Amino acid sequence: MADSILDIEKPLEKLEAKIAELKKLNAEGGIDLSNEILLLEEKAARLKEEIFKNLTPWEKVLLARHARRPTTLDYIQNIFTDFMELHGDRLFSDDAAVVGGFAKLEGTSVMVAGHQKGKETKENLRRNFGMASPEGFRKAARLMKLAEKFHLPFISFIDTPGAYPGIGAEERGQFVAIAENLKLMSRLKVPILVCVIGEGGSGGALGLAVGDRILILEHAVYSVISPEGCASILWRDGKKAPEAAAFLHLTAQDLERLKIVDQVIPEPLGGAHQDPEAMFENVKIALLKNLQEILSSRSTPYFEQNLIEARYQKFRKMGVVMEIVESNYKKH
Image (tube, rainbow, N blue to C red; front, side, top):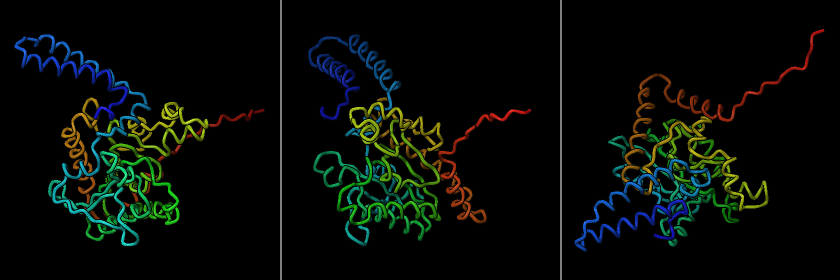
């Protein structure tokens, strides 16, 4: 997996390789190197904390795209039970870039869906790198309608560079499929939890991301456009992506401050891929907490109407700014 190592991880990788080499010598060579190993481990821990506590927005983008980062199916398989995947949009085909189906979260029946990237080239090509076509969004819409029919909470995992921009996708109504999902999710009569686990790119993300609670992993990103796309438009130079990433305010911390997301879920030091089991547990705890808070008022009158109204107000407040204009009027 050397090709999946980020530049920011390389100094740490060299140090950890040295530690592994000394441990092997210590075990096989009959030489006591325990003190040297301990010193290097302490140095590695300090370096790791220094690197990952001071990431730039662009470095967070790269970390969100990490090839070894857990995918939607990883979360489904490790957080939920009794998962039964459903396929196809009943109109054109089955889009492998979106997965979903019935599942249980600690005994509570739910519908779960999300973007799915591959872990190696062949699978990434099959899943189109997590970029959904119209049939992917329509598959998700089908799952949402089933969730509403059976009164099941809908849980969505977001991890996509954006919707697929190919000619075929446009011919089959890409923008219509996304718009229909926005309309559907805004009016869905069941709780919706959204969790951004990697990239949340543009309308491709938003087509599965209108929810009552928006959660995001510590090193995930969520933006109206990719940094590369933004740089190409503003400066006609994709190499200025790091600068664009800073201006886009796409990090989890920025989004929480701007009240775009409701909760930032902490990642293991070094990123979700460093300790997937801990990451699964953190996400599970967050999902359960937020779902229980929403469902606690399920028995109250007008629960569905109140849920939809609160969701509407939540998105209406996003992007609201206060402008104070100093009057030049002078009293005579």
